Length: 324
Image (cartoon, rainbow, N blue to C red):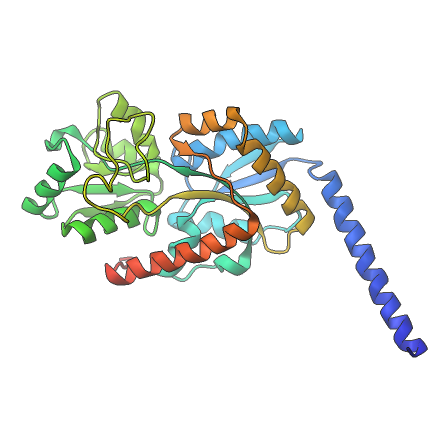
């Protein structure tokens, strides 16, 4: 090797080793100040309800504050954009349900690229919710509700956390599979939708924040959009049991880092989340807020996201879903 080439190679190797040592040092001391978790929806919805126990658990595990910042609006797009444009230093992360990343970009142009703007950190659980109906409508089961909707096209109004949200997609799936006309009413967040559902201004929702009211008898739980019945309400059938298999559309929650965040920090964060998920304490807390504990490797998250986007794209095309 010529002297010039050797010096160039040595300088490059030294620089690479220096960067590696710096990243390792960053990871070893991370976090040494408060960490921000951006939730791209308003307070009071499923994202907030699931995110709060995680913020508490992470704060205790790392000895630093993990602070939730709700950045709602545009079906999650505003918060996701803020996270994507944050400094990739390990002190700002996105905590979001899948829709903002796996549905919304399929329906409209977004200021972030799902697969390029973010790095997967950890999956933190799936929400366990189902279609809920206001008792003033009359039906007591999903089958009766579908029959009512067929006789009264457009009379039922369904509230969601916004255009392009998983709740939006779920009603579109039901409309497509059952052949019914139900009015979709998008809100800034699920809490706002619930405020209109309880007095009967709208008649349907599919969110975890309706479940306490269903348990109290103020709303009717028609089904659950999940593989298994909810242990909280085991008498309520799944959507599959109601005659609509392969129609659940999972709402999975995960933590994402801005692209460029040191890999060592991401891996350290992932390992801690996986450890916490396995504890009985976290599993109990998640089930108390109608969420199912889930764990995946970083590679599995990447593959799952790709497949989820593919399935959603097929539904959007088949049901001719548009943001209007």
